[in-house]
Image (cartoon, rainbow, N blue to C red; front, side, top):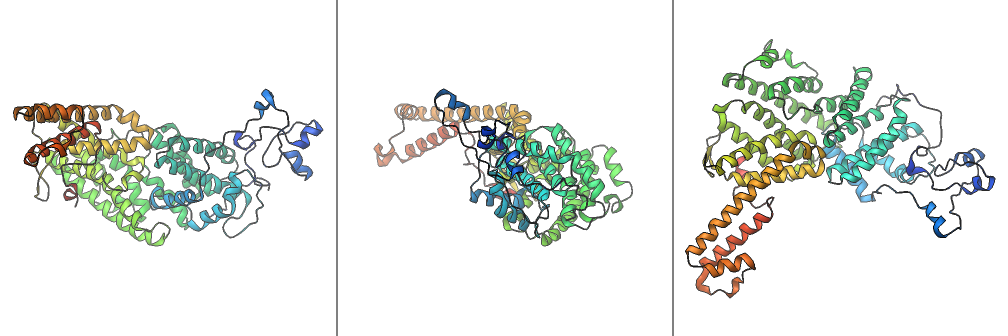
Length: 530
């Protein structure tokens, strides 16, 4: 990649930033103490010892007792294990980069093997220019980039505290370099920081770092032939950073995002390939059945063309090619696609069947083993589906509609849907997202509470109905036994098989009341997926 725009400071040993508490000794070095000089306490060597080219030792004084508490060791960041480092790299290329990595795996792995442990431990690195890393400054920028990946890895694997600590360190060091250099790795780091804060819900920082990335793209990426710099631009176009994503209607969202995605993907403007004025018409057209069909045709065209391009691009990006990436990418693409559809359909009551089918597909997609790896850009689609299913379940509770009523799909299939089981899926998906992304608690917290209450009420009613049925069948003792103790089924005679079945079902209902996110559901959800 191009580094011609890099402005670098004078060459210096690779040490951690002097103002970073994680890289300062809690005591002065022996040399400065003996000379009664002020020590800057830098690790691994203070400035005075470094300038004199003498060994710098930080040894705690022999003094003990209460005074020794002054020499407590500084708090350390969570240190990743060798296996975890490999997982961080794999996570970036498989999930975080979204098929648009801005660095080669060979460079990142070389940096990790040769320098990471020394930098993490505050050691003085002996650096020599090589084919992967050309300057000491570039080494520092690579470390920043790795820290941003590491933070997102912790965020995506439900370790929010560790993610926050690493990101604070990354931002602190980044501040030093933003005014010194326009190196590509710095702005690759900014993009990852924006992605991190999108999940946190700090949209002021999202906008700030996204603006830095767009500034770099505008001034330095035009007409570039470098694939990684182009990927920075592509990822920026795909990145959904605006704060109103959950309230923005489908057409406005489409007009805002998709033309740029199309342009950076296929190097052509979308409006040049459509009927003249098509996009402008979509922007102002009223919501009608005919306009929905037109919107869907344009949406289908864009997704098919962009996906074809991404398939060809992946062939040039061997670091990303894997079965896991392909399946993950397909899941994300479908979540976004159905999310666009759903936000249009909610305005068309006459297409309620279509709306319910699309919402079901979104809920089923969250059952994928790769859903736990998805980015915050998927929150909008999942929330929209959950809102609809919660509303349907409340209608069922109020007697407005029946549960398990038939739904005729667009392919002519007739499905009987247990919407409370679907709502459980939505709850599990939202809970998964909430564990990763703090913004889910803010935007979906009240809805999650309502879903829990609705499911609790539903399964409590089921348990009460079954209990009443058991009593009507002259089984009060067995029912009371079930309520207060675990039934001793083997104590029942062989002639009581039907009562055993009933008690087992009661036990299952009891377990579901205690855990609304139970994966056991009443529907074969695979049949809903195309």
